[in-house]
Image (cartoon, rainbow, N blue to C red):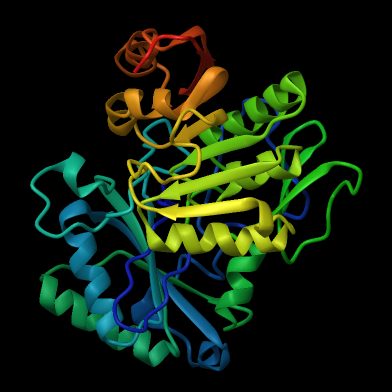
Length: 377
């Protein structure tokens, strides 16, 4: 899975970023809690882009927010912004923080020629935020967008204190408490608790920053399972994303881990993050779908298999995962909803090769875990 709650559309050299309100202290998510993510606060957000004061032209990092853009217009509006001078564009759910908020996670948020809402993987109504080098460029870009789309856009504006986009992104991530004694820490932050297990990550394109319930549940399960099992030779993290689960297993005591992912960016991210934690010599990464017999752990060698992916692959890959996991080994599956249609279907599907199947739940998401039996694949 990839980071996609706030996925930015990028073209050419434009660099997409995600902006969240900076938090001054560690985010404690050791207990289930509703996650609130909001657009960065703007100065004088009630002003219209059409009435920009000249005094703001001296500010180094102006941005605009177009409110409640229809799903069908998001891709076109983003393209117009990027082609007329925007340095980056990001999108959020216009209903974020309300009872109508909708979780959407996909790596192809702006898939071309999407035929329906599920295929397009973007909210019905979006807030689109764009950063520009100057207010003049922003004004011209808005005017161009209105002319092309034939609409009057609901626009607010503001200015960041810095045009260092890397710093803007860094400020949006702070240490996250997963459970007692376990934190995910951005590599530019100090450890909140030096005596705790601190998984160091460089948040980026790959999914797995600790802010989503599925990542948190898998990490808690890994912590409990590794403590219970004692010596653990090999952990397989399928759909590794940032590598957080494989790396977490290693820093919590596993001897070796394998990270498998279809996305080259995810594999590179896992490699980079392994280096930040000093475990690169114990992590093997594989670019592919995991069916290669030469993949480490593929021949019933894994003590632990963890897959935080999506319901479709979870159901389709039951035999593959059973083939990875040695008898008596443990498995955890997430990226699925807590419902009869999803977590219930996973329990039913995996009951052939796994016993002691149980389900964790947090914020409507599920983690199904169990123990490999001796049934042959």
